[in-house]
Each structure stands twice: as C-alpha cells, then as structure tokens.
Image (cartoon, rainbow, N blue to C red):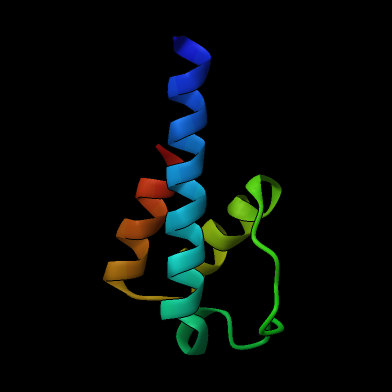
Length: 67
C-alpha cells in the first residue's frame, strides 16, 4: 500500500508542475521552449523558477510541490 500512495503523490506533483508551467509560462518560464518536458527530475527546476520569477501565488504552488 505504501508505494502506491507515493506513486499517486508523485503523479499529483507532476500534474501540478505541468499545469503551473502552462499557466505561468509568460511570467516564470519565458525562456523555456514550449515543448519542455516536465518529469520528476525537472520538478526542482520548476520550483526554483516559480519562486524566483513569480509572485505570491507561484510561491505557494512551489511550496505545494515541495511537500
């Protein structure tokens, strides 16, 4: 049961990271290519950009991605 829960949490983080990338492309990810692939390995990069280039809303999303 434990690995399944972790897998679901990871999928939720991926979904949130992808949605955040699409929604905040112009604000935080303006220099990224449109077809940038977001994976588990790129989530830390997404978090850094949400925090450094964004606003209060993106900072909160970054916090959710770190949980």
